Amino acid sequence: MASEALEVGDIETEREPSGGEIRQVITASSLGTVFEWYDFFIYGTLAASGIIGRTFFPAGSEVMQALLAWAGFAVGFGFRPLGAILFGYLGDRLGRKYTFLVTITLMGVATAGVGLVPSAAAIGLAILVFVFGLPPSSPPGSVLAIIVAVVAAAATMEAAGGMTYLIGVAQKLLRANPKQIVFVGPLVAYLFTFCAGTGHVAYSILPVIAEVSRKAGVRPERAMSISVIASQQAITASPLSAATAGLLALLDPMGVTLGKILLVCVPATLIGCVLGALSVVRKGPELADDPEYQQRLKQGIVEAPVEVKPLEGVEKRRAAGSVAIFLAAAAVIVGFGVFEGLRPTYTETRIVAGTVPLSTIESAVSELMDPEKAREVIPRARLAEALENARTAPPETREVAVSMGTIIQIVMYTSAGLMMLFCGAKPPLAAKASVATAGVVAVVSIVGLGWLGNCFFDGNRELIVSTLSETVQARPWTFAIALFALSVLLFSQASTVAALMPVGLALGLPAATLVAFFPAVNGYFFLPTYATIVAAIAFDRTGTTKIGKFVVNHSFMRPGLVATISGCAVGFLISRMVF
Image 1 (cartoon, rainbow, N blue to C red):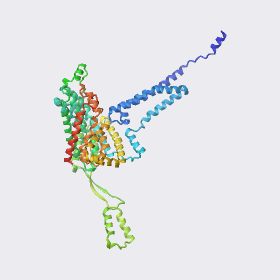
Image 2 (image 1 turned 90 degrees about the horizontal axis):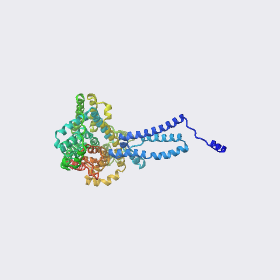
Image 3 (image 1 turned 60 degrees about the vertical axis):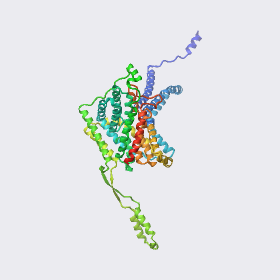
Image 4 (image 1 turned 90 degrees about the vertical axis):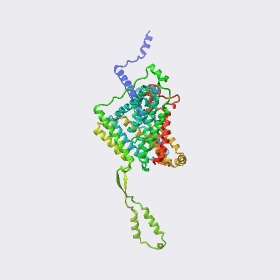
């Protein structure tokens, strides 16, 4: 018994941890959990706001960007068990405190490192410059300056309530002619996008088009599909859009005015939209005969859309005033573009030092070739005096008209200032406006893609021009296909213009052809992932506006192809008369 008691006494019993030690363990584990979920919270917030998708993923589709961003979120969750196994083992071997500090440091470095990662276009530019040794070229500065000015004015108008006012006017126009919604809908979408210079107006009128179509017994797919296409086509006809500004900046040195671009693109895109509407006016069964709509009615899925609250009193007057100022600014820009004589001029004095005028060289050569002066001896002092007189060219003076890019910037910034002074637009609200957010995305996209395209093209100019010039000049329509295909990938008219129009100039295509094929940059309806397309499908509660089994057989394909092809064809014919 004694031996047994001795053996039992020799066994060490585990010491119960003290209250302080328990609190320390709980605090440490809680801090680890808090830091971990704070990390997920930061990523989730940036992913939900679209910042990560727009910055780090090159796909132009907002839906694809969001899916890729959330895929990164899912990868983080997928690696949690692996991290627990690895760092749990290290914690047992090396100590929990050391392992805890290592994991927190790694999480912090990774989170902070996201801010140091360049965008997709910047990565491509870096590869071309640092890996392949191509010259870096330069970003499209004039295009960016014009876009920033236009976005500033549009965002200020939105801050003053101008967008809400335009939406109210659009609702009245749509409800006034319910039976003709297939034609009235796209006309209103075109008109308001043309005036605003942005397709964001479509988000607010699409629910109205869907509701009016349903109440009028018209299949909503018809009006919804062509209205989305019309809002896209109007971008290439609006004097205030980023795409038009980019094209004007490229063609202005060639003498192409804004007036000529509008004379070609406005009728071309309008005719294209009308033909697109005709192509869908009888599409699909009538709403009363649609089995899917009837099924949704029985299930109670169809709901009335929420209407935008109308403005009243002072807010309405300020909003109407901001719209009037914005449209007046647009009219002034169009006036300067159409009538070149209205542009202000200034005298430019140009002194070119260290050069010799061509006339001086020709005179000297003719005198040296004179046989009668073959034996003439010229003193050194006289020769030095003649060279000194010829070394500096006389100053050149000429009258120069202010460029349209500069005029657009001046007028747009002036209109923004007037809206702040007289319409109550607040700068903080303008900075947060949806137009401002979209403008920032456009600027970043154009900087990256435009600079990347310039770098690639300048580094391979001879090869590209020699390979494609004959084909493109013999078959100009192939360049329109290239514009369409690139816009499908970039999901941006302005980015497509910045990336590919300079190539067209280098290939020797005339300015008339480039303007005629400008509507071809509206190809991002081809894949049904663009925001306005997704919104139209969501707003149509009847289920008639939809994506087909094979993805590309969606509601927007027929009117989009008809409007784009006919717009380019009509533009090609009109350009031959304008240029």
